[in-house]
Image (cartoon, rainbow, N blue to C red; front, side, top):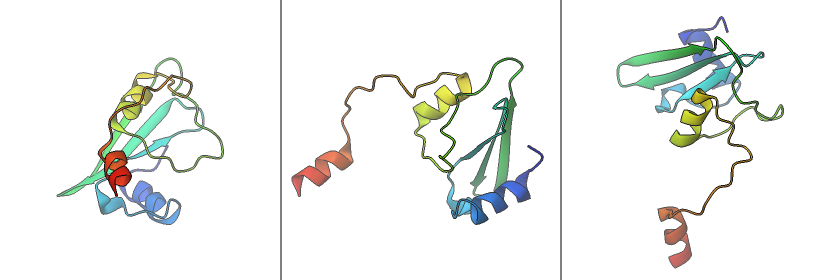
Amino acid sequence: MRKSFNGLSALVKNHLDDDPLSGHLYCFINRRRTQIKILYFDRTGYAVWAKRLERGQFAEQPRDCIKRALNFTELQCLLEGIDIRNAPKSKRFSLRTVAAGSV
């Protein structure tokens, strides 16, 4: 976890094939799953947020999963150490579902 602004933005461009200027948050977890860095770009520049756990580990991600989208709740759970992989998910209203179903 030595990379900072330039190194993390280069990873987003070259390894994830995405645009680091998009405004999305990019989370990077180290191999031991004890540190996380979040890179994002706001209107004025890059920002990096970091967290190191004193005990425990972040929830394990599948080894073959390099890039995965998280919603706000999933990000909160990741940062709090809650493993939601096997948690039951209730159906919720989605505007995309309604729009796609009405066409």
